[in-house]
Length: 177
Image (cartoon, rainbow, N blue to C red; front, side, top):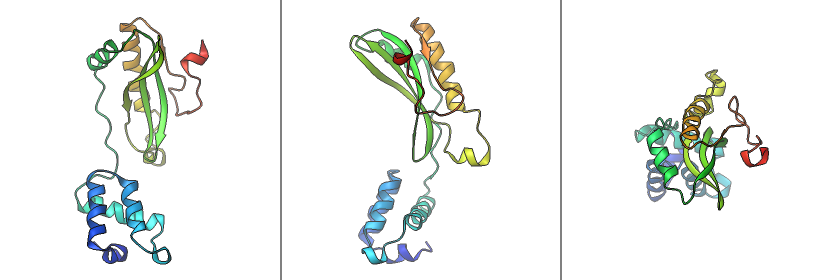
């Protein structure tokens, strides 16, 4: 590997960074790499990230997140049937992390009032925004298709306030009643 930071990193820290990469803990690997150096010679965030990305490549790991496998209506139905009480709605909502946007699918119950996660759906990183491959958002389309079918199976409403674009502030089902 052709990085002065990697060359200066002690063997124990190299091993620790590689273990974090193999476990797909990217940010922890960046943090460990940076903390292995004294403050006055510490690599910057982007420099450390470049080293970690290269470690992913050298170790045969994929840096980009894999899309989640397609949802199984049968599996989700079994998850809902295993809940302590009957659902009152199926809801999809957006969330995001350092990799990009994804959609949560969940069952809502009233007695007790709770949200039961069923699945998270991710179809790529936010690089899609820069290379023009979204919209449409395929995770939203999948959540809508499967969520509606699941809601119909349990004869409850399906709610997804923002199927056309990510929106963390979209109204939730309980607030729209």
